[in-house]
Length: 341
Image (cartoon, rainbow, N blue to C red; front, side, top):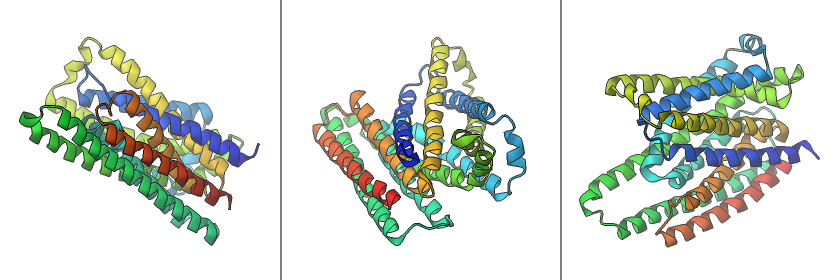
């Protein structure tokens, strides 16, 4: 079995994890939002650093000997992602998992793949780029259809309920949720840019025999710790300002903390697997892999959204959603071909 075939299999697993971890965001009671996001971000730091240490015990020497840009840019991209991730988590509570994933992953797929393509030294053939661009355009069409499905869903569900007294509040939350989802997509795209800039460190690690898993662990550590630490600091300020530290003592908070820890593991499993897949897919891995990774995650999250009842009472919206998913699957064909040319 070739490295490219193995890479696509690993990428499939990564997309499954990425599309599923958002389930842990849907209900964070009895914790307040700032407590939920703070402890989740703290767990994420522990998981990321712990995995890096297990894979490459002396990783600090690789980081200290690397060029400044290969360390600073990934960290800055991580901080940008950390700020946008706050918006992502809030957007899920405002407009639902399916719609947030649709907007966020769509923007992330394009932003996170174009920059590595522009900056890569060994450009692919003209035909490969043309097929890739076609795949990107089809991906954007699919994402637009899924976004439309989310808008139709909201209208259908509101029509079934008596929302007259609450109309302004619902509309206001929907607008805020859409804006936060758009911003989170930009930040999520920065993740892949940061990971790609850290690739020289990963290459050095692989040359010393630690393999793709070790390289992926260290490249992600540089990006993710900066972002998660940003979220932790934000939540500490928010907890203090709102005086909500007490929610950690509420009944059920320990159970919720365990769920959040498991969520952080699934989340990092997605990114770690994606990192391994890009290294197996070759020079175009960070470009085509990121698009497929986001598209797969979007498809999986939509299936979870349907199963969890987000689309109840929205038959027209659900039908449009299925069409959008079909278009995404078609786009994968073009992207896969571009990687093979």
